Image 1 (cartoon, rainbow, N blue to C red):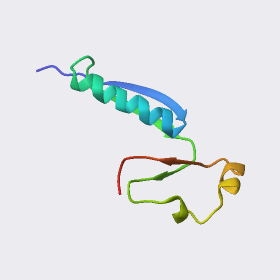
Image 2: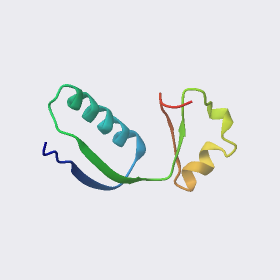
Image 3: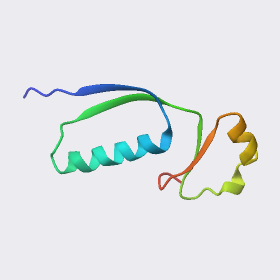
Image 4: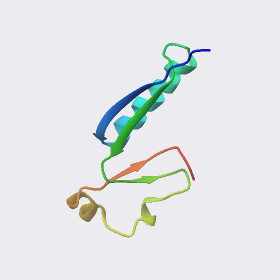
Length: 79
């Protein structure tokens, strides 16, 4: 069996739109519309809040995080 894996370098990306891209690619892969692939990237500074996290768990204020360029993104992933 000859299998290949395409790799893509996406560079530095914001977390939320990249997460949406990955979810879209998973859907397309499950429908056999695309082949296996590997995405290589670096996220811009981000704090992700999983299902069990609350905004109050972050000790730094929103204004300070924005000032220093850190995004806060709520996700349905993890715990």
